[in-house]
Image 1 (cartoon, rainbow, N blue to C red):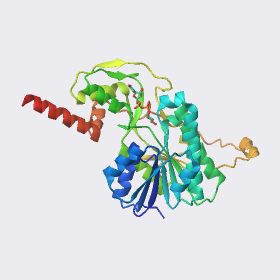
Image 2 (tube, helix red, strand yellow):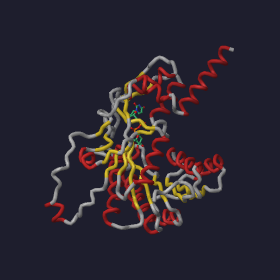
Image 3 (cartoon, protein in one colour):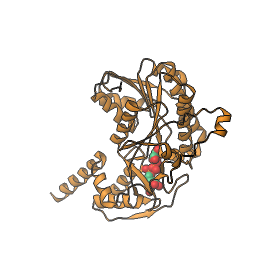
Image 4 (cartoon, rainbow, N blue to C red):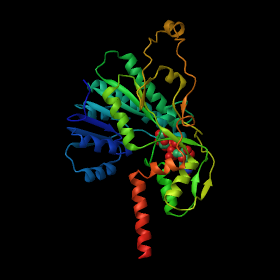
Length: 349
Ligand SMILES: O=c1ccn([C@@H]2O[C@H](COP(=O)(O)OP(=O)(O)O[C@H]3O[C@H](CO)[C@@H](O)[C@H](O)[C@H]3O)[C@@H](O)[C@H]2O)c(=O)[nH]1
């Protein structure tokens, strides 16, 4: 039976983050019986408590690095959405072991706690940076995916299903480039662009929630769900922001940063060879072949071949006008546009 959001009992790790808060809103509006938020920052939880004022939400202060904490928070829930992560590329680059502790070992704790507590389904949130990773954040997320899939392979018939969702940049998520460009436009300073030709997939927060919902409702254990997305160059993104706010396009080119890729990959050739096309999504099932050594060396699968990776370079490309249209749908951008118009109106009065 397809699980439903209504009347369910949920745990969201990293529940005070951009994704977590959007997911909590969605669960409450669809009639969840209980939503637990596990995160490290008590002040963010307090702000969330004041914003929501809903008794169905319960707050757990703690870190996924601690199995006991995760286990207590998972007791009695049916579904877990695992969003807690160290996700800033530079901080993981400078402190890779911290990324190991949170993104890999913390995720293993989430899986173990779910199995111990008989949770029905867990969805792990991953990123395009996990594919052919070049930075510690992506590497740790890649290993997180492997931890989830090994759980499936090693526990056939387990009650707990563990799926993965993978997506590209979420527009306007905390600390990302669009809020930075908004501030730079507000302060009248040039937009700092790393490389105008760099490309990124663009996705909205509600789309990331939709993908997680799809995985939790339809995923088989070990599946990776990928949301098909459109991409743009960062030069076009900066130009679109300036056009939207009707300011001259002043751009300062910084150069590519430590640990960055020019283009991201959402799915590798190897994954695409096994993927099922579900229209808006791709489903990559776990390769569940027995890892017993003789089979590993003697039984390959010669039919499996796909000629290209799915990258932000070869994906459907948005031009400046498309990006302007997309930006105009974002609540954060709309709010800033309204402020600017109000200020202009006050200036004329
Ligand atoms: O001052 C800046 C900062 C960033 N960029 C560029 O803008 C793009 C997006 O940057 P940002 O929003 O910082 O995202 P990423 O570094 O691509 O990584 C984000 O997107 C990932 C998903 O791909 C998430 O997992 C990460 O947590 C999140 O940091 C990149 O091409 C950057 O080079 C600029 O041009 N100028």
